[in-house]
Length: 396
Image 1 (tube, rainbow, N blue to C red):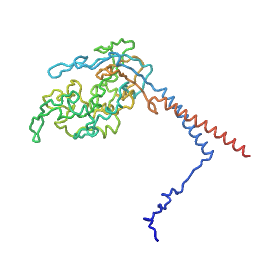
Image 2: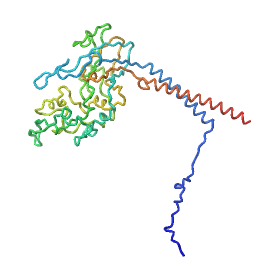
Image 3: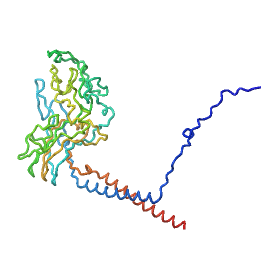
Image 4: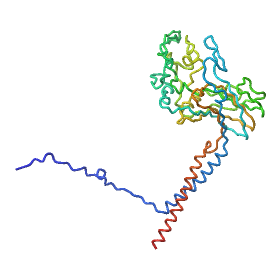
């Protein structure tokens, strides 16, 4: 009588890798090699940490808060600055003046930063509200992540508004196209570009002891311009006679060279700073829809590139300008044209003047961390030496 045991069971695959029988190495370190490595770490980290702390202490840094001087809020119908719009006059912004003192001579380069406290650029929906392909020069298929600044009127709920745009046909003749706001797309789109920091910060050297009116229209007598923050075009070239500060170079090279490019040609559906020959006054001036005075940024503007590098914390600073002149000790005037409203949501705005060292900016945390790690390595090395001596003496 025979028994059917079913299909023959296959043996496991006999291979060292499958059976976890590969040769392995278990390195063991001698006490001497471990002690040498720890001493090496201590010898390197402690002097470098002391150097970082020393150089950080030598770095000049001055923080000047200015949003609390006039507590400027956005108001489309009133402000310190007037400009014509659609056969009317629009007033916006605040003129803010404050005095500060530098107590030692500062050699160039001197870096101007704006610091914002209480602005959450890392909020998920805000941080993704952009279209990197569009920023690189593409004009097709704008990302839905740009909501609510993908189309004109989207934020205000007025996407059905119609307008006429005059464009050139292929043969050079003028053609009038009928569009609605929903047919158009912002370039650049998204909340990050819409909320770009747009205060202008300027610095003047003034005679010591000068009294400064916080919202004066005129500058103090004998005020000497050190940096005109608004004296640059969108290519970063100076438009004023003052060459003491520069704008080119504030953004990272990959952004300038690769990531931010203008399209080869704006189509009739592109709502941009360049504007159009149109019946719509907002588009013709390059303003956001229903926001007179609020221009769309230019994609190749380095100020935009800096702003688009979203910060991970709600207290951040971003590079604004670089001063290439020596600042002598004495009184200075910070003149601000304020348009960026932080007062309405309780945030703060600051100007920071800072110098650097070979290790970069001020960084006490790094220096102290290196010193602590070096000291720990030194203590461990001494402890291992003591343990080694005790063990050798006990085995005799």
